[in-house]
Length: 139
Image (tube, rainbow, N blue to C red; front, side, top):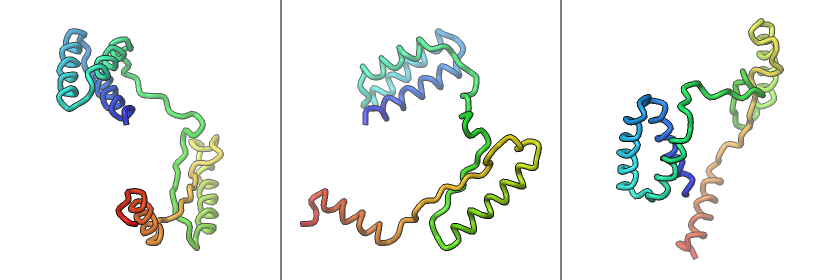
């Protein structure tokens, strides 16, 4: 997809912008980078537009701000199973213990639980069968 190609170019150009402080050197390096992308099959117009956009941006060396809605939450991903309810109870107990610490006292939930269904052999077989039917290799 086009957005993947453009984000690869964009992130690399931004990386150069952060690393290189001299404007003349940055222009030379971005030109070299442009040639590499074009030789790799990226459209010249796409690369040129992204480089122009990066040139307009300020050089930002500060880290990206973190999400404020979950500043200290750790998500624990588990698959459904017989111990799911026991696991959720234990997480509540651990959260209560952690919140006794002055560092964590303002957080409602420090450890969160995300439950996912595990892939079964049947799921894999059906997925491959659907893929084969869609490609036309099975009639």
